[in-house]
Every structure is written in structure tokens, then in C-alpha cells.
Length: 129
Image (cartoon, rainbow, N blue to C red):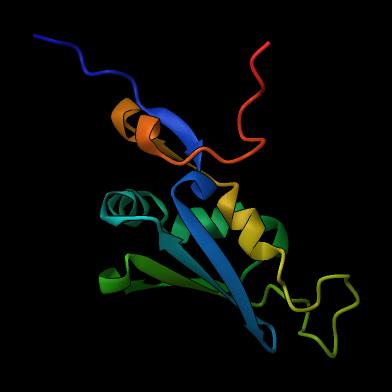
């Protein structure tokens, strides 16, 4: 019996792209997979609880995931993460635009086969010596 190769941890930016929006104290983060196979990984591993843990430093009151399978995408709504919203917050990112980049740093486990075909991102890997 051939052993299964170990899964590899890769950041979400290798499998998807993201955008963020805001309304009051609520941030919404889209996560759009590059293709259906990448979407299957996202759907299985990027859960409401993982996203809530990932953004725990922002103290979300609730995280809700909305599925958009025909677009190979999902949308996360994070309530209570913008320090009251644009008019109340004293932080530098009152609209929460940087939160989409933070989401893309989360890692997921993928097969070596999938990892090999994921797009290379400039600066993602150290340059060969």
C-alpha cells in the first residue's frame, strides 16, 4: 500500500483573492478561489470558526459565512471588528481594507499535486542561490 504524501500548508493568497468592504462596525470579506479545486479546499477549511480565531485580536461579535458556489467564492461578515465604524474609530484603517490581506495570510492544507500547480506569487518563495 502506497503511503499518502503529507499535506502542505500554503497561504490562502496562493488559492484565492479577496476584497473587503464595510458598513458601520461590520466588515465583509470576499474570498474568491482561482478555480473549482481551490474552492473545494476553501469550503472545507476556511470556516466561520477559523476566521473568528484568525481575527480574534479584533474581537468579532459574530462571523457568518455566505456561500457563492457558482462563483467559487464565499463572503465572510465580521460584526463588531471596526471599533465602531468610520466615524467612531481612532485606528488608521477605519474602513478595514487591510483585513482582506490579513485573511489571505491564513494557511490551509493542500495536496502536493495541488501545491505544484498553484500560481507562483512574486516574493512567495526565497530566490534560488
